[in-house]
Length: 344
Image (cartoon, rainbow, N blue to C red; front, side):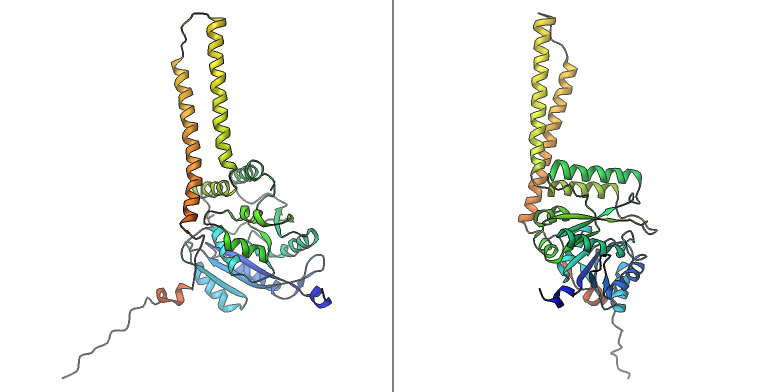
């Protein structure tokens, strides 16, 4: 590598999925602006943010107007417009696919992620030769107690029980090698969980300590139903280990049945020989548990089949369109009426 190439700044694209960023995007952009000039990481490496991609995911507020204002005010800001609401991960994939930087940084719109931490994440990637670096919170996430507990539990389950080798605590604040991020965006299916898909092809994955900030004063876009759906997509995207769990459930209930049979036989022949075997209530409980386990197992299998059917039918994870405000949908004003009558 030539000396000039070695001193070239690392070019970074920032991807921000936008759902309800009307109140927070401008402040976030003010923090990013200093990084659009060449700055240095904590270890002295040059870097520059060459573009910020704001992916409009059709939220409930007036984020679209703010995106248009920011793109008009800053040449490095680009709007990425989706055809409908797809969700945070598909929106992030759309931004990755539209990026051109050597590195891609994904961050939330709510101000929780400090852009100043990008330099430390880049140092970690270069020092450890990692293609993916996740922010590792140095403080408790500023969410509710139950949400934090549920988040830790679900990530532990995915990492330990389903993903196996990957024990990284996933975060939406991440640094990804550009070619890796764009490759994932190109082939990820409609039901793929972004971090699981990154784990399929990424080399070494590292973490970098980052302090999370309080979210801006706004309602969270996550509800219980959304979080459960988010978790279930993690399970289905993690591979076929969920199907193996179905087999273990069947084996566990089969062993339980054998134990109960042995208990009944021993009780009948040893402890109470010749007595009538009673216990219809317990029999019904066992049957209900057995049928419940069977239906649950069939449901898990059906979910996997459904994911494959959607993939086979070609359901896209996202669809990028032009800014609706500049297309036919933006021409909503009626034409001025004309009076074609001639005066007599």
